[in-house]
Amino acid sequence: MAHPRHQRRPHRPGPLSMVLGGIGELLITSGLVIALFLVWQLWWTGIAAHEKAQAVKEQFTQTQVDSPKVAGTKHTDAPPAFTQVDYGQAIGMLIVPKWYGVTNNNMPVIEGTGEDVLDQAAAGHYTDTQQVGEVGNFAIAAHRRTNGNSFRRIDLLEPGDEVVVATQDTWYVYTVETYEIVEPHQVEVLSPVPDDPEAQPTERYLTMTTCHSLSMGEWGNDHRWIVHAKFSYWMPRSEGRPDSVLNDPEVN
Image (cartoon, rainbow, N blue to C red; front, side):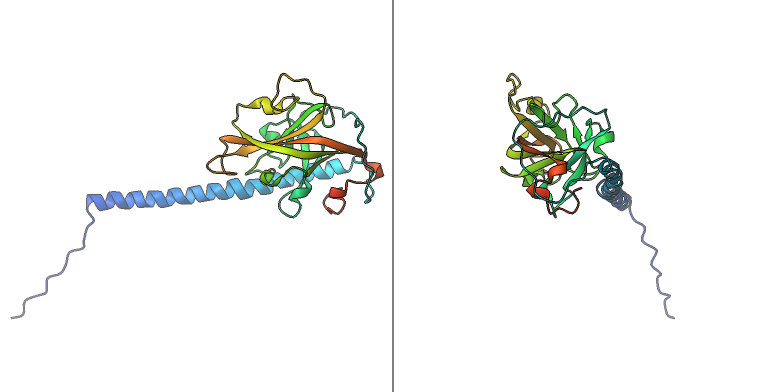
């Protein structure tokens, strides 16, 4: 008489396997959540920020004096004084010719450095620093990553590169002199004479600040990347344009 085959009982995972399986599922879920957060942080916030910047740009450019697409005359005397605007109002457009074709190189400059300003893919003016073109330090900040990545490629700027601020009626042109990486508490970079809080200013500076990390580069914020530029010349918009922006189709 044939013996009936023994049927194998279903294998039941032990407690350790169940715990490990649960941890694995949790890690997968956590990974998906992190991935979705990064997509939102790096992609979606950028889209929303650029839409806000475009709205500011369109509104501001309507107030600008027409500027013919010809090379203007460089004026090296004292530029026209700029009248301070209220918090959240546009000062002008920041144009970084070195960034043309690489990243956004034409963004609004807005009074203030709160998140409500910087999240508009804009550069924000430190309210306790000097005005554009004024003797002292016109200091601005912007995000490096998220909300438009405004100053993402600040590391490309080298001595001799121009940085332009276009107000309603004037081009203010600065030339990069140096850069430094500092800790967040080193606010002396914003002094009227950068890095020399006790000195009385006699020249016109522009300082750009954004986040940086010694270990993660553009992805971290334990340090700050600072670029210092010095005023070179100005010209009325009605006379023409700086050579460095003459062929940029995005510049009004």
